[in-house]
Image 1 (cartoon, rainbow, N blue to C red):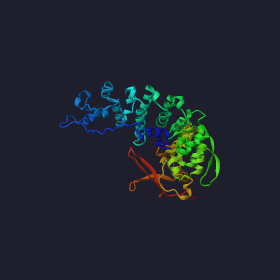
Image 2: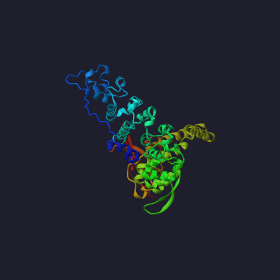
Image 3: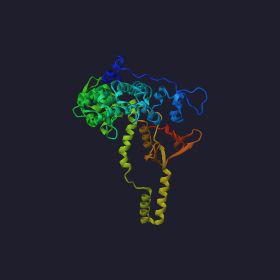
Image 4: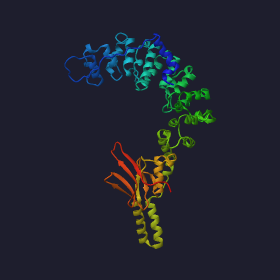
Length: 459
């Protein structure tokens, strides 16, 4: 549901449409660049630029340029001298209409702890002024994509909470609520009488933080959760684990069959891309892979990177287990041979082993950017197919060396060499090139990937 479709938004905006409320007028005074000791005609717009970029002190601006238009544009908590001047002349020069114009013109009117609602006279803060700010916050966030603009709301809640109606709290839940570092600040300051089902529903819309964790259990009915999914399947990002595991009846529109599934399963069946919004576990990984092949867009765009990260986390414990290093192997090998054949032969054999092992250790790319034969494309993605090729060639993958390369052990018959003519690295068996890879390595945009495989997984 778009924010402009919320009943709370419609009720607020309707008061402007009927003429009950009037929005502030956007001040379109031109702002010109101020460059040093400028000659010729100066305007208040030059001094707005000068004060904004610290080119001149507020005290040095001639009084004739300190117009209403100047203050509409220059007023900000960042410019303490400008702010102090406005505070000292509230009501006379800076009346109610000034603040409506300031809100409509400057985004910083609603930003920061010392936003304009923090210091404007209390009699200015009423339903109309809050409605102007609320619609401006919606416009800035969803039209211009410039942020949440929530500081002003907390100032109103602190200074004059009695003017905040149910519609303001509901729309605020949609705009400002988030659970970060274990706290949902907006929910904490909302009076209990305004925490309605509509309020909680609005809070879950397009919210990627776990806000639902703090909802009363009586709110989290199956009907409530179904309505969220029906509104937008991606609303599942706000679901708790308990809600995700709840079961519902799901009707497959393609087969017309009805089955009992969990909410997370219904979401995946509805839209595979939603897997990005759900925490993975073994059951969810297996379920996704059952319904989306590895050549599907859902797998490639939404799931693949998450899946690789999930597998890497699972393997991390095994990687971190103590393993026998070369020094331990050499010491053991030396001792064993020395006991049977003498110390000199033992040392020579062990050194030979280390040299041979070092000669076979190398690195090969993790990524493959080439073609996967059709018979393998649903079973393997590019990186998995490449690993299978390595395995068939007898290459042992030790671990990931970094985000570009595996550390590998090559069999005796394979060598890596660099081709000056092609700019590629070649994995060869005698004169036969088995695969080719590139390492294009500008420090800011490195690319390492196999581009050509000249062998097959077929027997």
